[in-house]
Length: 244
Ligand SMILES: [Zn+2]
Image 1 (tube, protein in one colour):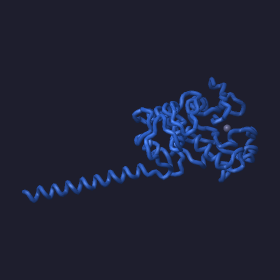
Image 2 (cartoon, helix red, strand yellow):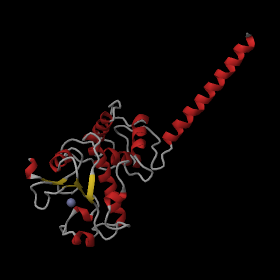
Image 3 (cartoon, rainbow, N blue to C red):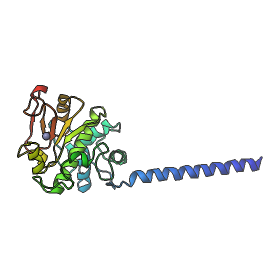
Image 4 (cartoon, rainbow, N blue to C red):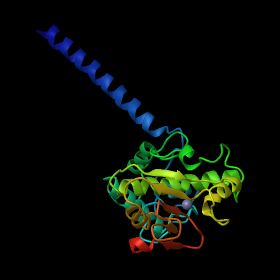
């Protein structure tokens, strides 16, 4: 009897040891992110490059017409954006970016820091090195990354519907070839033309609450077959057929 109990106990101890090792390995994997890892909890008043990295990921969770600054200062607007992000993904919406928030971000980003549902290739069908636009290749690529995170937010807010991008970054040559405006935001890397479903009007309307300052859609010249979203320093929305 005693022997049987001790054998059971031994099995139990081995089982528990295995379980603990398993949990430890999982937690370790979740925290060692190959794109970017946050090493502290961030909240209102925090500042630094880790705040900027957070702002890039939550900039799509703003109110209508609002644009979050990538200034590395965790102010009231960053708090509000983090709250919206948390609420959208079923987390406690306290506006403090801690382990649960970062775990969600890790789950949403690929190793190259793009959000899971978008790729650099989708945002650049023009050339392989992001050169030839109105800004440096590095700036164009980082602008595209910021746009992708806004699109990831918009995609989730629409009910996790896939979004189709027909055109993103364009060099001046690519832009001329498709008859784009000489001041097009496509030359800066932050523009995306959306096609497919949902409807172009639905896309234009939804884009208003995801940090896009330039929205052009149905009723605006040459925009009846797609909705264009971008981050223009001079905000401008026009989609007359959609009430915008
Ligand atoms: Zn466009």
